[in-house]
Structure formats: structure tokens, C-alpha cells
Length: 388
Image 1 (cartoon, rainbow, N blue to C red):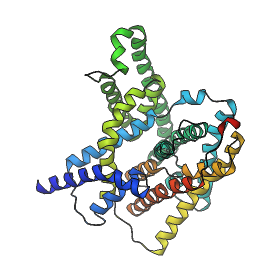
Image 2: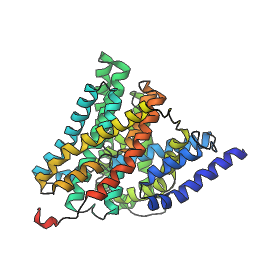
Image 3: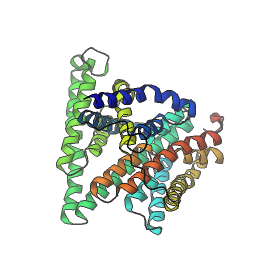
Image 4: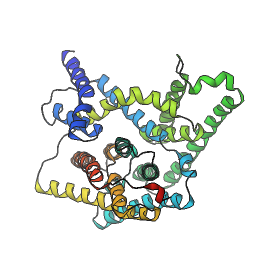
């Protein structure tokens, strides 16, 4: 009991102080939380013992992280863009994955490791763009939309890889694809039915998107997250992927979700999600640091940057400078959350061993530090009025 209380105390200290140290060292908070977890965990001082409570809070934070990531998928924002921007928004992340998979095939890398090389996530992207106060500029929105499409493609490829690992190209694989499509369609129909009540009875459901004591909007969104995560397991999809899909569906049906996102983000990013990242660090077991490991880590880092930077040069077609286009590619090279997601799923599927998992987490930390730093060094504010 005493050791459990000490563990919770140390995690709480991390939740409180890591954001301040992360700001001082100019690294993403999530990276700081993983590093803090490594320091107090099995790799370094071994001060924290796992418990059912900590495991539960970590898994809950993980589900919330993926659900909120799904909520950030704003396809309505993509529809508002010009045809050229829409095309680039889809072409750039597609080229990223083609390059990553081709490089991975050439170097005989595990498919999931190749997927890590091409993975794109908006978490660090949004954080850095907000910090530089350019998220709402045309440049910032373009990078954000590319990140959204890249994140969706990442999850889609991870889902297909999960089904393929279990069933290869057998009949069950195609049944799994059909079940996944039906899962998405049925879930969306149910939520559309729910939205129709909001539309036809606005006075009764006015409080859904407003601040109120019962916080019914948050309750419904969390219920949707849990129900769809459970349903995902019934069709042999990882619950975290189900949580992401739940967020995407919710965002496509209820497009004005800013108030709900704000309410969820408070407790999620303020408490539960940090527990998840700290827990990742606590459980992290550093692989044997030898020349081969360092060589492999540097190779994956270089490939990750290469796969993102080259396609991002196409942003020059949007009127951005070559330097800022390259800067965008570097910023997209920090898929911290998805690297952890892919590595954990890979371990569960038995296609990634713990040594490789440790290397991938080191990759997530390294790119999480380097990518924002390189972006900040390269980015120069432009007069966007001349680019429109």
C-alpha cells in the first residue's frame, strides 16, 4: 500500500512540474513526460511499482488521447479549401507513406516499422503551431490539414496491418474489412439518428453543446467512445483504434464539437493523458545501447525526416517559400503518439519484440525533440496576403 501511494505521488509530481521543465528545455510536454517516466521507472531509479489503479488510469488516458485525436479530424475544414489545397492535402501524406513503405521494403524493415517511418500525427504539430501563433494562418491550417489526413491514413494502415497479421489474405481478412466498414456505417447512422433529435427538438437538447451542471455533452461523447471501443473488440480491432474511429465519427456527425473538446481536454491533457505518457516511460526498458542500436535509431530518424521533407516541398505550389515548405516537413516528422500506438499494437500482435519497441520509443523521443527544434530554426513568417 505504501509503495502504491509513493508511486501515485511521484506520478502526480510529474504531472505538475514536467510542463514547466519542458518549457525551459523547449521540448513537447509529452516527450518530457516520457523522459520523466523513464527516470522514475524500470530503466533508471525504479521508484514506481505498477498497480491496477495506475494501469487503469493509463489505459483510460490512452483511450481519451485517441478519441480526442479522432475529434480533431475536421473533414469539414478540408471541404472549405480550394481544389488545389485539397489535392495537396491528400497527395503529400500519400507520398509520405509511399516513400516510407518503399524505403522500408528496400531495407527489409518490418511493415509496422516502415509504418512508423511514415506515421503522421497532429499532436506535436498543433502544439508547436499554437506556440508560434500561426495555427490560424493559411500556412498553419495547411500543415494541420495535412496532419489530419496523415493521421487517418496511419490509423487505416495500422488497422489493415492488424487484420493481415491475424488472418493474412484469408477469407477472414475480407470479412474483417467488411465488418470494419459496417462498424463505421452503423455507428454513423446511430449518431445521425441522435443528431436528428437535436435538430428537431432544439429546446430539449440545447444544453448538449452548452456549459451546464450535468455536462451531458461530455457524458454522451464518453459513452460513445467506450461503446465503440468495446464494439471494435468484437470485430477483432484494437480498442484504441475503436476510440479513434469513435472520435472521427463523432466529429463528422456533430461538426460543432469545440465546446466538448474543451471540456474533455481539461481533465484529459491535465491529468489522464500525462499518466499514460509517464506510464510509457515507467514501463520502458532501454535496449542494450550498442553501435548497432544507435545505427538503427539514426537510420529510422533519417528515414522519418526524409519521408516527410521531400513531399512537403510540394507546398511551394501553395505559394510558401522553399524554406518554410521544408520546415513543414520536419514538423510533420514528430508522430510521438502514433509511434507509441504502433509499437504497442505491434507487441500485442507479436510482430514487434520488446527490443524493437524500446528502439521505437527512443525514436519517438528523439524526433519529438528534433522535429520542433528544426522547424523553429527554419520557419520564417511570411506575408500571406501575397500568397493568396
